[in-house]
Figure 1 (spheres, protein in one colour):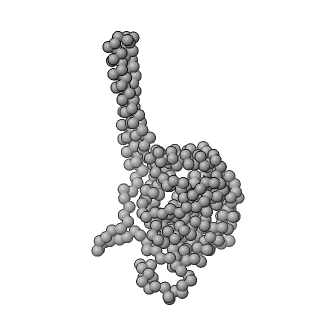
Figure 2: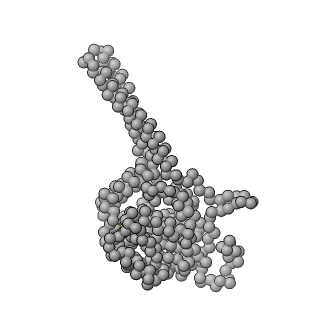
Figure 3: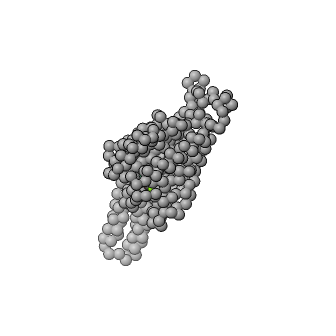
Length: 347
Ligand code: UDP
Ligand code: MG
């Protein structure tokens, strides 16, 4: 049998798109089940992130009409990343794998098939990456691409042009659950989990209806969150700046001494100049050093896992965190299926 797939969709004020999104996702899931890529017990989970409109009512209706739809209702608006993690962690034990995507149909749901193929080929994480941004406005494209460049430049490594459309296997979800930090930046955290990963390219469409919940202000906040929650590079930059100022001070010292020796300076100029540069440099350097320690404290307080074991080879206690996968194929009658692979999946 194929593995149980859970779609996880965070929704904030999405009443305009939900009817269409649910319809298309159900179709897609039906298609995946018929191709033997997903188990018939697979589900579509909408996470209501404290919406102010009728989003939750719609989710309740969908669930009442069809058991394929599930819902998670958050107590209040916690933002996209928290809503997504809430959904993933809620379904973690029921699902063999999850695919997360936005509610607005911008992520091409047809790419799921390729993601699943890669999953059955052994990938634990499959990143959906936008191949083009044709439909985005120039402004959105410019700011979004600047966002990735800024992030990477600041030491917060992310997969370029990948947002939150991704497949995660159960062990990847379990790995992610070990990250206990509260400042969430999932697209930076998932690569830290490790395990084999793959990329699937898709074209990003326009928002189906409604408006973006990520205006420039939120996006800048998000970038800042990403940088400060993944990297302590800004602190190291202070140390660097201190070093540069100190170097300038030495050059200025030589220059002033020469001028002084030539008798071309006003009394007091040299000492004033040097103390300004010297003290400035010393302050910045010391701040940088303090920053380095604060950075270490910061990373320690996150309490992140120090390692995640993939496999332990040992005759008595050995284990493998990898889940054995078998792609179901309904076209083949059960009894003609190869016996050995059946045995493996029963383990
Ligand atoms: N979202 C959320 N909580 C928020 C803001 C957004 O759950 O506080 C969801 C939203 O419903 C959508 C996804 O996050 O499913 C991405 O938001 P949006 O499409 O507005 O962002 P954009 O595509 O414009 O970057
Ligand atoms: Mg969107």
